[in-house]
Length: 255
Ligand SMILES: NC(=O)c1ccc[n+]([C@@H]2O[C@H](COP(=O)([O-])OP(=O)(O)OC[C@H]3O[C@@H](n4cnc5c(N)ncnc54)[C@H](OP(=O)(O)O)[C@@H]3O)[C@@H](O)[C@H]2O)c1
Image (tube, rainbow, N blue to C red; front, side, top):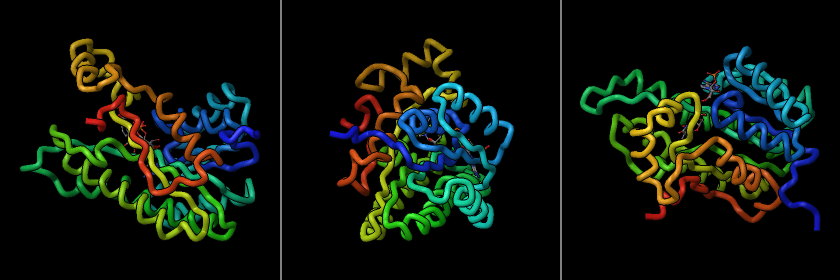
């Protein structure tokens, strides 16, 4: 039996591929055999990530700049990927933003910023890469959602939770609309993952204990914990699965 998790010969685009979670996902995808394009706004960060990933996996990693909120920029990214690799098989939307604000004073410009990146950006990336996948009648899209897709949270997270609820519904709806084209649309839903943006939690023993206590498996998630489910959803192993969010949360959403 062939290895149903391998991605050899595939071309994958990881939006936010230099970020805390995105870099781990791009590394895993590259290790499993795909050529990876990592894309976001900051070329310096992309170049550094591509170099690190290439050293670790020996795979081909291409850094390309793109702003996921800008349709023209994403159209140019699609054209650059097609020019370089001729096709795209896998799209991972690992970009994102959270701005925590008290709900009584929520500045709507911050609301718009997070909706622009998390919701509109997810739709724009799916739309532009989905068109390529429609032509070849094959594709795997993995949106990085969150446990906040189905679980509310205090601490100024009304906007963020709302965006992840929307990402969940984009995932389900595109899965239905694009099933006739054999485009699989799924999501992963991590709980807290330790990245440069959340490392202060791991570094503060009291805070770390508080977060661990809320997780049935009693530990903090690491970017590496998001890799297995992503490879599964990108690979032939998930060929009868679409419209699902796999929660990567140490059991948090089981209760
Ligand atoms: N860390 C967690 O605890 C956690 C838990 C659950 C879910 N998530 C989700 O996981 C995803 C990644 O989070 P992370 O913690 O890895 O964040 P991160 O380290 O801040 O990475 C975010 C990435 O998104 C890119 N990005 C932001 N705006 C963009 C835009 N307009 N166009 C293109 N790229 C853009 C950033 O690159 P540039 O700034 O260079 O563009 C960066 O590479 C997000 O969707 C987040 O909501 C995170």
